[in-house]
Image (cartoon, rainbow, N blue to C red; front, side):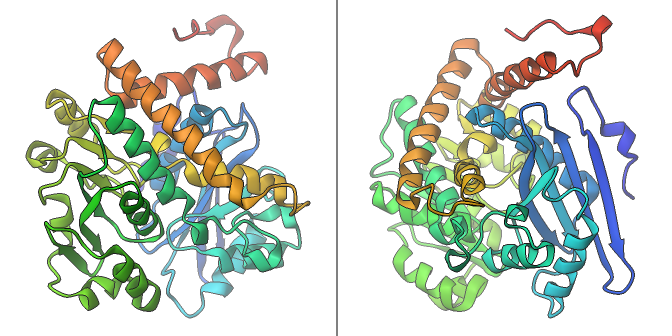
Length: 388
């Protein structure tokens, strides 16, 4: 049963929760605007048959910290549709969702891409609302910056991992990497890890996992994914249970699929020297505590997987003038931002003896709180002291 929304409202948000439905199509969805003190709401839209309002709210809060940590001026928000992203009537559902949110989009929120949605779905949002400002992540043919196609989020995950390894006193080149989730993020991360000199020893999808301690053929796996999707691991051969990717011997563990997959057991057993959160919210709070006690740093999701929102921010600039941003420059921007943030967060965590999540969140909260103060969004008689 969905918990009462009032129970998870706090001093940061959410500011608005909009639940929508459509009787004819059966569409059910939600938009959560978490905190817009630093700018209008921007975050991905996901589609899942197990989606909950609470899940979307948690993701919206992560977006609040993600935008602030990057010092980009948008607010935390997220949207979600309850349904099968592979259903034959997907377009009908998307159109009903867009119509239901026409008051909020694009005035308060811009559709982006998350799990279950791709560039052609962004095109549907654009067409239904008739406004170039309605969505980012559009196909090239519509003047967009197709960041899933470019693999910007996965690229950023590998860049953050390389910077974190260096900050921790060792080299990523020559290390072993295991990636749980070989979707758009995991696949792009795998390709970049190989370019940086690492060896990808395991990947997984919903169909299973493949593991080779000598290294997988990432180029072949990428080609298979393009042809058969999640079944790429079956086609590759010697498929094993999907959770194998979380437990094989590796130096770097990248959870790049769903929330809360790294629990106490995995945190206690992993051989990884570094965990890099490619997915949103993939480690439990208890698991992070265990990893910290074991001396295993975790690069937080809103630091490591922020490459997508760097691209999204520039996509916002491209909505009405598609030639204002050179897509070739995006990778340089992502590398510069994410490497600096990953190194800074790990250094601050070590200096203050905090977890990297705490250090990163504190940085983000300082920026959000400053904006809330300036905009008069805090009770005058109960203004908290600035975070130091």
